Amino acid sequence: MINYGMFLMPVHDPSKAPEQSFDEDLELVVRCEELGFTEFWVGEHHSSSYENIVMPEIFIGKALGMTKSIRMGAAPICLPYHHPAHVASRLAFLDHLSHGRLNVCFGPGAIPTDFEMYGIDPRQAGAMVGESIEMIMKLWSSDPPYKIDGRFWNIHVEKEVRTKLGLGVYLKPLQKPHPPVSVPVVNRNSAGTRIAGEKGYSPFSHHMVAGNVMQNHWEVYSEGAALKNITPDRKKWKISRNIFVSETTTDAKNKARHGSMGQCLDYILQLSDLGPGRGMWKRDPETPDADVTLDYLLKDQVIAGDPEEVVRQLLEMRDETGDFGTLVMVAHDWDDKEACLRSIELFSREVMPLLNEAVP
Image 1 (cartoon, helix red, strand yellow):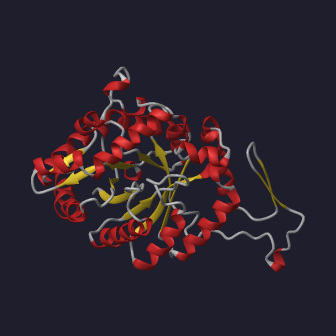
Image 2 (tube, rainbow, N blue to C red):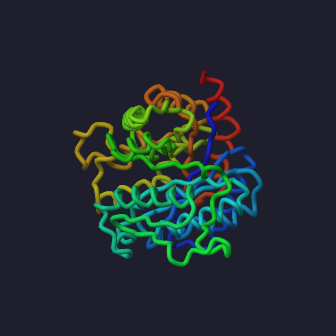
Image 3 (cartoon, rainbow, N blue to C red):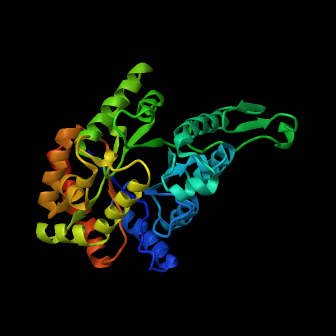
């Protein structure tokens, strides 16, 4: 059985009042729980009027009080922007507040002005993520004193430790040994994907990459797992997709092209031009960057149609990727609230039952 979740980047119309965006996002969490979504993910961005949730843990804290069962997580927690000890302690705290409903996803971040704001060299972000994860796991799995030296951070808790007074004792997560950990995977043949396999973390494939790239994600992840004699579990693999469902395929494709989904994808393409380029979104690496347009994505990576057509496209994707455990729908701004809510209702009530009937 394939589970299903929701990923809120978010990308909102900057002309919309932020409080309206946040209220709609919280309403979406509640509706997702009612519709049987098993997990909800929230992005972190610090200097964008489009991607305007700065601290996903605060958002999650409020959403936990409005829901009862759906699992919540930040995707990702941008580790280069934070001291590892701060991340470890606040996530352990949130895990207890959630009564064990917390998921975590660790990653580098992507907004260029965020890197600039925090003085981060983007070329070092991957190494910073790896070091931070190791430090977080050390704090979660051991007791003081701590002397953890790294390239980017140091954690020393030695001289003032008084365990009888509780000094130096860091809160451990409620879930043992820690909340489930995912890592975002985007590029072909990524070292980070291989390391995720070595650690047994869940790979979380990006919503704009092609099916053959996701196939490569699993191959590289499995290679990493094999290095540590771990049997990779496809149920741990999360695949995110831009999906729009309507009563007719013509209407769904029109809304995907001309509504907030199309605007979001075009925005990400423009962001890509500021950094790594459009290569990561290509099915064929030889495709010229100029050809990787919104229409290219709509044809190859976006899934839009009536329920039967969406299921057909998802099964076609699965033929390329192989089995996976969770399909994560991407949330978009409610430029047409009625149509957006109808899309997720059709996805939950018609697409997923049909998809699971067709999956062995």
